[in-house]
Length: 295
Image (cartoon, rainbow, N blue to C red; front, side, top):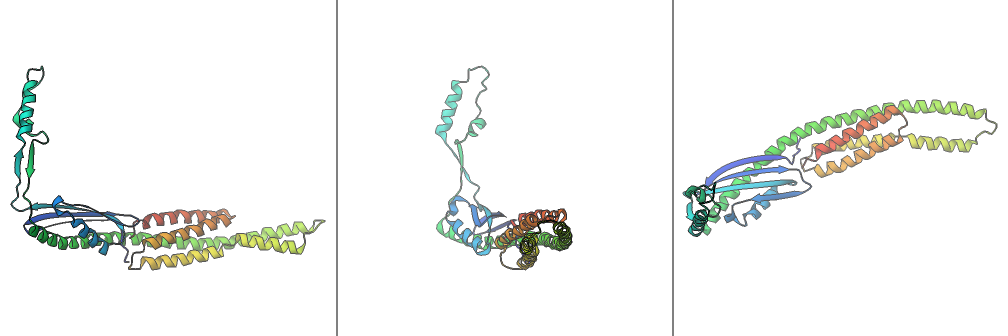
């Protein structure tokens, strides 16, 4: 089973080029491939490289990539906005004599947004190029881990989908049996009606009887629907074993499954066959829910 899910998660860490970094990537289902990144501001433009690498390895999914980078030996420097701090002291002194107002403390004023900033050293262009090269290699490994996680989830989904196809196949066999029993019952009822018509003073013409019989057979025959249902099951099993992304084709095939189940229910005049058709519709809907996560 070579199915790939669109759901996965991976995390990795590394160091080199005078930096330490942490990657985190997660993906969920989507109609196409969409890659969103959250990178440090000094790596402006590197998101294009990330998206290119991801698109080379993944076919579908909404992928979220987060990267954190810290520079070796960069503990950051504190910069105090003294003008703002003095303004806060003046403001505190102005209201110091108000009832219930506590005296201003330095630690409290330093905590006010904009009073203290932490600055980091800037990377030169050579350092940035070296870092991006290391990050590119590191991200390639992260994608491998994500694909492994998606493959594990795909294998689990494959088992579920195979079991559901087995059940669809079983219901199709049950529908054939029910259809055969229904045919015998319809023939019995038709013979009874013919017996009544023979006693009628105005018998029905043979040509009209033949037309009614043909119309009844066409309306009630579900052999074609069951044959197509069988062929859809065979095709679905082939897709589940395919190594290429098959999520879209499986989704289309589900529409065909549902069409046959709807027709089966509409042609059924028997409660047993109707129940089988409804069970098929429920199962096909569950099958379609599962394949929404298939790449």
